[in-house]
Length: 333
Image (cartoon, rainbow, N blue to C red):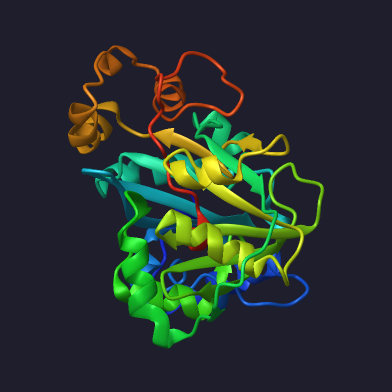
């Protein structure tokens, strides 16, 4: 890029300028991206927000947030992508595409082997991101009388413990979880969090994925899966109609709630394995325990992403049992 246009990493001092652009694009009718996404727009994460600066003004931003995912015995580093936008006056100049390419380089430098993007437009697909991952949406019927309450910050340590017992999850430090509870958002919607003496659930209301119904969605849960089932059925007595979103690793919940109305869906966004060698190295403990071989022969990263994580429409060849991927839940950016 030449002249008065350049790609920069956001500095703490210019965070307000980036937030002004994000609010203008994503919250034109009011709201605060900083309050809704405190991890992405924190001073600590400023350097991971890439920007296009034209004539000294930030006109395009590309949010990156680096996290870790636990896959049973393996842990990989992932780059979460969100809040990608360009000021209306500067669109059509390819700025987001240039930031996308720069983000791929930065992510690899940070040691991330997988990119999870909260979007699926041509910018991401041209970069090689694809629809992948296997998730389920089940209607919640019946009711129980389990005692529960709306969660507060006093429940933080208990909820964090329940989350830590999940075999497939985003790794959350206590301070990260605290900010999530304070923001109370999941899958880009306001969320309510409920807790019993043995489980927690995160519930949103709206339209998710290709679902035309405006209904309640349990988009995150933790604790013993039988207890989760009892809790969400109790919550559904007041919040109805209710559906619960699960991954392929939620075996008990999938068996308990499966019905003719159940749906299969991909990840709420797009995915891309950034580097085959790095990804397989990070995932190797899981692959070795399952005796999965032959993956190294696949060189096309888009095909490799689908092969490992599977697809909801069974597009192309995949592992017999694809690697389960955690859902966004409160980790959405």
